[in-house]
Amino acid sequence: MIFPVHHGENEKMYDVIIIGAGLVGLGTANALQEHNPRLRLLVLDKEKGVATHQSGHNSNVVHSGIYYTPGSLKARLAKQGNRTTYQFCQEHGLYYDRCGKVVVATQQKELPLLENIYQRGRQNGLEISRLSQAELKEREPYVNGLGAILVPDAGIVNYPEIAEKLAEIIQGKGGDIHCQQQVNAIHEHADYIEVHTSQARYQGKQLVNCAGLHSDRIAKLAGYETGMKIVPFRGEYYVLNSNKNYLVNHLIYPVPNPDFPFLGVHFTRMHNGKRDVGPNAVLAFKREGYRKTDFSLRDLTETLIYKGFWKIATRYFDEGMAEMRRSFSHKLFTDNARQLIPALQPEDITPGGSGVRAQALTAEGKLVDDFHFVVGRRSLHVCNAPSPAATASMEIGREIVRKYFSAL
Ligand SMILES: Cc1cc2nc3c(=O)[nH]c(=O)nc-3n(C[C@H](O)[C@H](O)[C@H](O)COP(=O)(O)OP(=O)(O)OC[C@H]3O[C@@H](n4cnc5c(N)ncnc54)[C@H](O)[C@@H]3O)c2cc1C
Image (tube, rainbow, N blue to C red; front, side, top):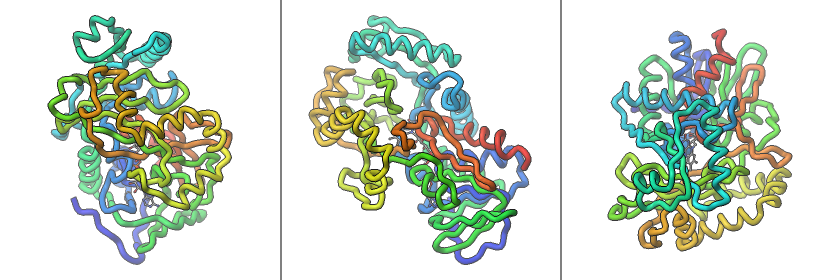
């Protein structure tokens, strides 16, 4: 796939310019073309190709929608997105494995939380079932559980492959995707919008900001205060040595802490035959900082001078420090994962990749839970699209079109 780099002035007046060639940006372009194939579309990204950040650094899980508040966008779009994602893979001959997942309570105190998740899942209209200890042992002989929920619709895909296919479809229908174009200025005029990168200038009638880890900054460039800031949380993975693959049959998840939007360290059967263990959730010192040593003075300063950050840091100090310690200690990380699979030994796992989550945080110190859009005059800003936004990406795009662009 060739992604042109554009230099100089582009005289074309686009109908919609989308910033960000992650899954949400591509899902939005795809939905706009479904809605009106004649629209002139442009997707801009600062990197060399598509899905370079969150969309290419995640667990590759197709979520079902079990955890999310009934009636929320996450609940609805994850459920629809689950079907859409499998259908898309089927239609285009891409890898998918609807292997199912188990959510496991390992301690007595987690059983009521597990029951809450079950009730939520039922309210969200999912086909899920409770598993007894014996039924869980049959499916996952090495998992330690007092009770579990089976979620048959959860599965695994290869999101970078999906993003490449979406890009191919968008370009095939006449949409432009220009990479290596870092947006650094946006001017909204009465009847058009102007987007500047270091190399080129573009004009469009509408703009959609799908810039993930930089979505708050792009909104600000366009002149909008969103009332929230992106705080980056790195998620680090280990890989299970392949001679221990037998320890994991499904996707195996713990009962998540209801105070956090993250799902806890889980075991994931991957598209490449490997088994991932992770991710944890540690504060990243750089928005696109994939290594522990990555640091950006600008990014960290912005986090540290943000009121909302200190509110949440004070409230969850112990949890945050425990995550940090686990991040630096192979043994502590293993101990955490061993709650699900007691047979796991530190030598069974080796450090793997990582991803950085774009989590919006309000000035009041609230981690924004649902997908969140801010509407401008000629622009729409996707200000919070954390997990399960990969699963839901094509449906997020359709929602954006239905709500904001149906007149195009
Ligand atoms: C560790 C981890 C595990 C996850 N696991 C799952 C999972 O299993 N299932 C699931 O459904 N979801 C998962 N998620 C969430 C999911 O990956 C994201 O919600 C989703 O990929 C968000 O897509 P996006 O397009 O909004 O962001 P991104 O993929 O980050 O794309 C944003 C794009 O904007 C571009 N950009 C930013 N600033 C500029 C600029 N100034 N100019 C031009 N371009 C710019 C970036 O280069 C980037 O390509 C996970 C996320 C992480 C980090």
